[in-house]
Image 1 (cartoon, rainbow, N blue to C red):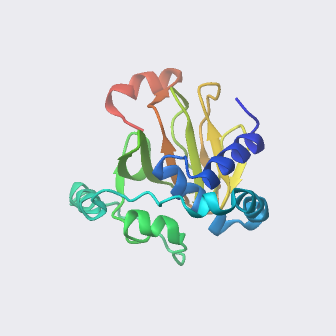
Image 2 (image 1 turned 90 degrees about the horizontal axis):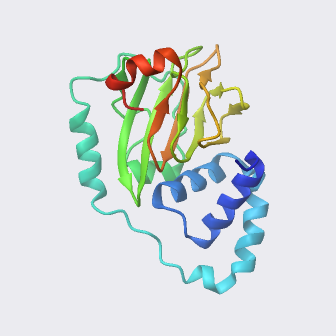
Length: 214
């Protein structure tokens, strides 16, 4: 696997060229809204792209309203009782993608993984998911059959490969076997994009694998 910084730089180059799948375009745009550390580098890439970049047509979401309606109906009656208590700071790019703020999304509890989640659907071969880790808790150990790219929207988590804070991106693939755990002082909300299923590892993971999808 590439070093995190190298992998993120590669993503940024694809973001500027407009070649990323729609959910990853949204994830990178949201990252740039939240963290200005890459803004100058991206601006330089855009300058190099010049008029060719300006001619790229934006990727339109197909039937976004119907997608949001399916999310709302699928979570009806199964909302988590926990609430986000801090002011919502959903990046504009993500808000346009999901048609809502993160605070207004009806979270659904995945009781096996001890997380709240909203499955946003599959776009351009990638699955997009919002998930919320309660403070001090994490998901089971797992690895990846493809690549998982995660943007921290609120709070922070650690997974053995690093500590990822608000606005930062984590990239994991089949070489990584990890267990993301939220910091003790705050729930952690993330936007994740995967291009293949996750695979649970360890004795507990193998036991609950038939009952859980993450």
